[in-house]
Length: 340
Image 1: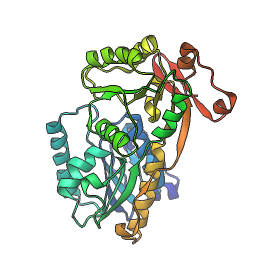
Image 2: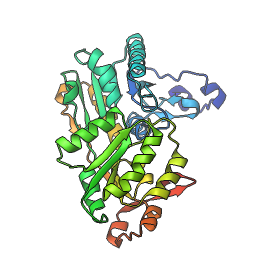
Image 3: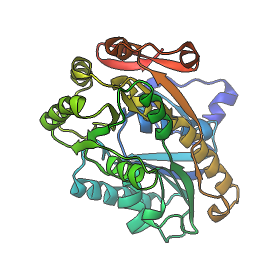
C-alpha cells in the first residue's frame, strides 16, 4: 500500500477485501480482545489502539497498515456473550495456538478474561513483551506485572457517579443489579472491599426473568441503584431492555460505563479510547527498545459526564444548568442509546 500510495494507485475495494496488506518492514503485534466486535467498550479500546498504531480499518474487517510499521492481528474471545468457563478456556487455547503459530513481537490483551484465561496460565513468565488494559481495579490478582509486561489498570469513576446519584435520591439505601460475570463480580468486590461502598441490596444473575423481577423489586427496596452491564444474560435485547427499564424505573439509576448509560439517569464514565491509545503508544515504545518493566503500570484518568434527559423527565428530575453545561446528553432512538 505504501508503494501504491507513492505511485498514485488506488486498488478497488473488492481486491483489497481479498488481500493481505503488507509493507516493507514491520513488527508483529497480536491483540486479544476478551469480547466481541460490536461491544462498545472493547470497540473503543480497539479504535484507540488502531489510531495510535496508524492503522486504518476498512470494510470487511480489513486493516490498512500502509501508514504503520506494525502488522496487527486481532483475536476476539467473545466471552461477554458466551460466559461458560469451558467455552472461554477453549477460546484461550485457540488464541494461544494462533499466537504460537504467528510468533508476534509483542502481545496486547484487553479486559479480565484474556488476562485470567490466557496470559496468567500461558504467558505470565514468558519472554514475549505483554501490554494489558481494561483490568478492573487491579492486576495483582493475576500476579501482574511480571518483568515482561506493563499495562493500564481500569478504574471507574464510580464514587463520582454515586455522589451525583445521591443528589437525586430520597434516601441513602444503595442497590446494584447486573449480569453474573467475572468483570461485574470483580468490580462489585472492589467497590465493597477497597472503596468502602456499602450496598443495602442487589443481585447479579444470568436469568432474564430473575433480572426483570429483581429490577422491579429493587425500586421499592433501595433509594438508588448502581447499574452493571446486563450483557451475558440469556435473552437480553437492547430495545426490549430499554423499554422495560423506562416502564419500571422509579428511583435514580447510575453507571460508570458509557455504553450502559442509556439505561440509566446519569453516569460519570471512563473512556475506552484512552486505554487503547495508551496501549498503542506503549507498544511503540517497547518496539523502539524500552523494556516493559521500565514502563510503570498506570491507571486511566479521563472521564465524561452523561445525562439521560428522557429518564430525568420520567422521574421528575431537573438538572442544574452548571451540570448540563458539562454533560453529554444520551439520545434514545427506538430503544437504542447514543450521544448527541
